[in-house]
Image (cartoon, rainbow, N blue to C red; front, side):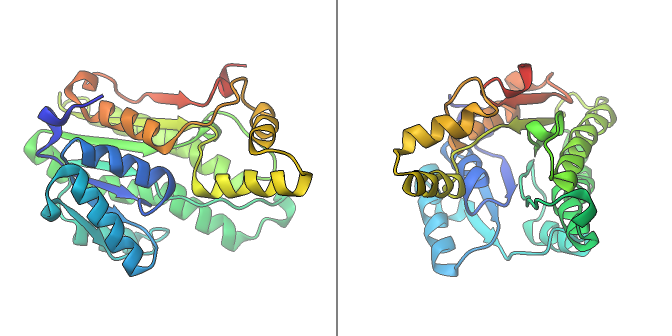
Length: 265
């Protein structure tokens, strides 16, 4: 789908966008002609290559840039990011991390880091982005949550708590911006997504079990998803572009599951 006619003047910040889901989202916004601000880790030559690729998609090398990585698990890091990014029209909160541990062994340091990056950062970037959106009467906030924003899995206490919190934050943001017809806030809740990290995980399983990629993919996904097909980062990007369009202007506070049926069971 393409909404470039309506979006090609918009500036989009996607956190955690130098790989995986964030890069897929940035790619689809670039295809819609938007100005793209990348944020995330990586080697400088690799980031330069990403910027060049995205510039080729939107046709303007001046409309793609990367802001130096900041520690988004802290308020100061978020403030530094938003200062360097400048006013943004579309904010996609995607940066996140995972840590797996039983509750009694879950370190307080890791709890604070996971909550800080997956939840608190979204609060900070949102509060800093809203004044500009209100001033111009237009804005989109898209939070990348997870199926774990509505259900739980063992050993993921901080991640599940953060994603539940992010779904709640999305609802509050939608309510507080309901007075503005052209500012919306919504969440996307992915299930299994074929990121490079997951690709390597499935390949490792296939090698260890002397089986094929497809066999291991089906085994892995069928543990949770009725549909044993991965979602791609670009599909999530298409949905984000739709949420930024005028067609989605009255979708507010929604949590849109893209999870192969995981949460409907």
